[in-house]
Length: 536
Image 1 (tube, rainbow, N blue to C red):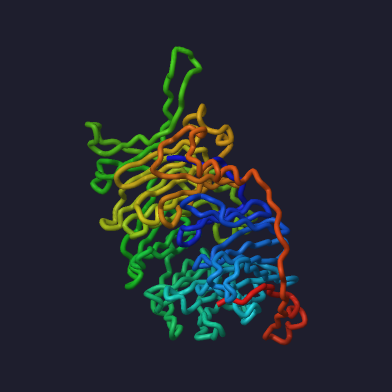
Image 2 (cartoon, rainbow, N blue to C red):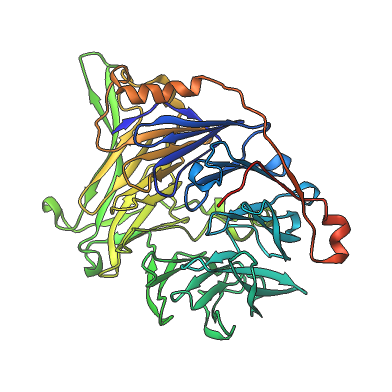
């Protein structure tokens, strides 16, 4: 595998089709073509970029300047502009009402912004270049509390009115017509999502209540209701649907993960994240256990001439003639959990204490499921859903930070906050150490800690992400000396040593009003849209 040099970044994302890569660096935004890794566009803003997001069709990208309560828009495809000219720009200013969150509408021509204190959500039209609709009292800020149907025609939004939770369904056309609204039986709704091929909406309550309810999207009637208390203490931590829509995972603050049939709403199995495995038990006879191991090799006669690297060591029942054993996994110190005070719990909200199933990742075809339980922070469990049993256990030297399956394969990437990351597949495993050959790699790699791994949607590249820097990984290549890198990698790395200057924007201001007259005086001048051309 080949790597680029570390790149300074505050945000980086592949486009949805995987053809472009956006990397934000302080006030600058670079757009790359992923195949050639050449700079396609560069934009400079007046303040630090806090986040970026591609439109669903990849024709636009938004750059959020949170300190200014602004969203800046850039068009990357002149064909969507009536004049066919390049350089379309737009800017959304929320003013005194603040900007707490934002999300693209499915048509890529509208954006929803959410104000501070969840006073309202505003729909901005890029075509009309103004605010076209307002929604009062959204309960959460994206990505929580909002979900678009699979056909992209409807939006379900959690709202808080009169100290009660409501769900409103809107048609995502130009007028954002309210289709249905109904009260839900929750104490403090945590999140919602569409289910059953857009016929139902699934909601789950605060961990203190442990309720999971499915409502009919058309009538608002209860289709199914589960009180999933797993004993004393906190209940549901997260809910997730599999890519094929058949399975629904419900994670708890204990060591359990329950799997439901998303259509019948019946529980299929409950996975227990055990701290030890006995190969004498039939259910664990075929389980593969991979342990991260540090290997030291003596390269010469000198005592300090050593090479250290990491790899997985595999264990399995009856493998290589070994006797049946009991494998134990490292657990979190109980003092660390007990030290998690009430103030800390309030700070992180519904994430709760460092217990329970915190990471859940599905393969693209829903055949494999990878999970992490915070009581065993160094361990990843991989479950095979065709047989509904444990397939592999991966034990690491450091706590796991992030897991992510490939978009087209069963390859799972695992990061532990070190200068290396791991991959697993049903056929093989690997450890990629960025400092594995210190003589040939840049010294800057020593300070790089892989916190997260993102796949290109095409599955042919990776982004390794640290707090303030990133690296591009090219699967299929072996480690090579950076002095002999391909030309396109050298050109790619050199771009980030150049600081450019931006150009001014042409702005046409549009005032926005508010439907609620009692709040008009406070909110009327708080938002504006600026654009310099008409869109299709």
